[in-house]
Amino acid sequence: MTIKIASSIRSADLSMLREEIDRCEVAGPDLLHIDIMDGHFVPNLTMGPCVVKKLRPVTKLPFDVHLMVTHPEHFIEPFADAGADYITFHLEAESHLDDCIEKARRLGVKVGLSINPPTPIEKALPYLDRLDMLLVMSVNPGFAGQGFISEVLSKIARAREEIEERGLNTVIEVDGGITDQTIAPAAKAGAEIFVAGSYLFKGGDMAEKIRVLKELGVSGQ
Image (cartoon, rainbow, N blue to C red; front, side):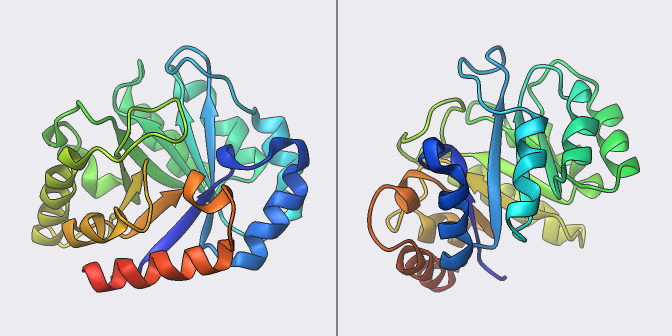
């Protein structure tokens, strides 16, 4: 499996977001991960579709939009119109997942479903054949800089087993606490896309950090 890195701009210096995205583009991640928080599903608030639309011309990187919101059905179309390539919403949200999946499909974006650390993986398995991506949260959502919850590794492995048994193309993404210490076990469990925020943005050579993450991810498989 190809290892991909998604740079999470929530950990960027938001006072100079254009420059931070330029830095990402030069460093070479595969996607730009954009966390959308509504202050209800999680305690924090972040950006809306108008900001994402302004960012779209700034970079050619695919936009991996993660909706940490209570009612994703209200946000799918605005973020699709703003230029999202992937839109991921939570299984735990107060919404009809079937309707959200169908809406995203109609709008031509790739569909992701996310599950929080306490949620059993079995609740997500029935949706796998309708998803482009399953996002397994390896921290509790809402705050940057948390430590990786190793108990999610068994969930990743179970999802990978199901995907392979059913011959699906659904990719597994992991978000939370991804560093040079945690990417290898997550890759060994079966993840392919790794969201990295604090590790990439908090000092040092971002391109070198991405290179190291990919190398460790490949060696961990």
